[in-house]
Image 1: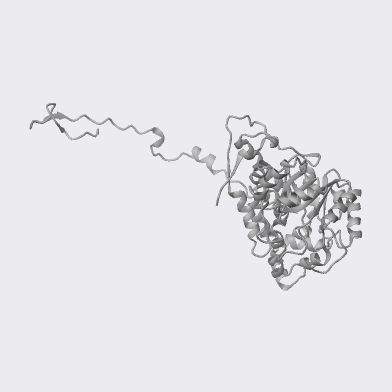
Image 2: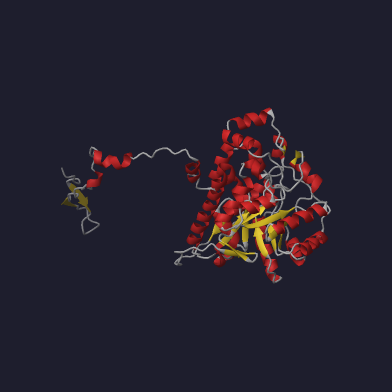
Amino acid sequence: MTDTLDPKITAAPANAGSDETVTRPAQPRPAVVQPPALKRRVPKVADLAPLMQFKKPEFSKTARLKRASTIWELRDIAKRRTPQAPFDYTDGAAEEEITLRRARQAFQDIEFRPGILRDVSKIDLRTDILGKESRLPFGIAPTGFTRMMQSEGEYAGSQAAEAAGIPYTLSTMGTASIEDVATAAPNGRNWFQLYLWTDRARSLELIERAAKAGNDTLMVTVDTAVAGARLRDVRNGMTIPPALTIKTVLDASYRPAWWFNFLTHEPLTFASLSRYTGTVADLINSMFDPTLTYEDLDWLRETWKGKLVVKGIQTVEDARRVVDHGADGIILSNHGGRQLDRAPIPFHLLPEVTSALNADNSKAAVMLDTGIMSGADIVAALALGADFALIGRAYLYGLMAGGREGVDRTIQILEKDMTRTMALLGVSKVADLNPDHVRLLQR
């Protein structure tokens, strides 16, 4: 049946203003034709078959890691599989953890500014850092107590870095020795991070061992005159070696893989240090030197023949000064928020530091850490002038989530993030990133 309008429509006559009206027949409305695709029908079995292909559940470590698409998802896996004390040692920061939150927020408070109609069919993430090529513009930062997070520890990190073609940094407070890491990743680019001790002879011994093992870069950390107030560690009773209280045993009991690995591998120690019993903070306060000055940096520059990097720079003035004293590179870092809470945020400091060093015609490499949780974060840092980035927590989340495979997955996620972000920005090479690609938003 065809719908129609009212049979009559009254309209004003042509000679408007008179009292006469004109009545015209209504025009029929065209019939509405429904598209065949919208007509309801009983579904056919042949149509349902492609929709009924249920995947077989996979519970392997590889499948679990593959399902993680972000570093945050690796963190969720890590939290489920790791006892509270070691997880909090990685995840936590000093005091109220304000610095860590601000550092992560800093990367969120940006606006990317993409260019269009560029050839981005091939994205090249290679970059030169400290005289050698890195396949990706980031490396693995030094982390202490690493085998406590997961038993493969530094071995997983160094081997994953070797496979990815990026630098790996071993900490003075690492749980694998300089020599063992060199053996585990003989073709990797291994760096060594040094805390200068009050005992200079011990420091010199470590420096000589690092050089003999083939480390081409020495990274001296300068922001640990005393230990920061890492309250999660205090509450968890984090000690060296770990104390097995009723709480820790119960916490580990429903994480059998971690428990089994912990009990069946070599006891946990700081491999570069003599055996020590006590809290992490007590170790730092008893061993590290609060009297360090620029004269000590001069001594290091004379002693170490490779590349020298200073980690823990938090002001423009200190950046300039360490370069004047011979540093080949600086790392803008507040120790991952683990030392001074409310410290400067490296990402915020980056433009000012790079501008100052450029004005000085400095060739020193500018690197940064803290707060990086995606490849887009790294791209933003590179655009604002960083030469390189270092990841700490992001790599440890992968380690806790799945050992060596988990670290590999961390690197894969960051690489994929960077590739996609650069393509969407219209940039095909790291060297072409510049401040025009990023705008800092005002909060």
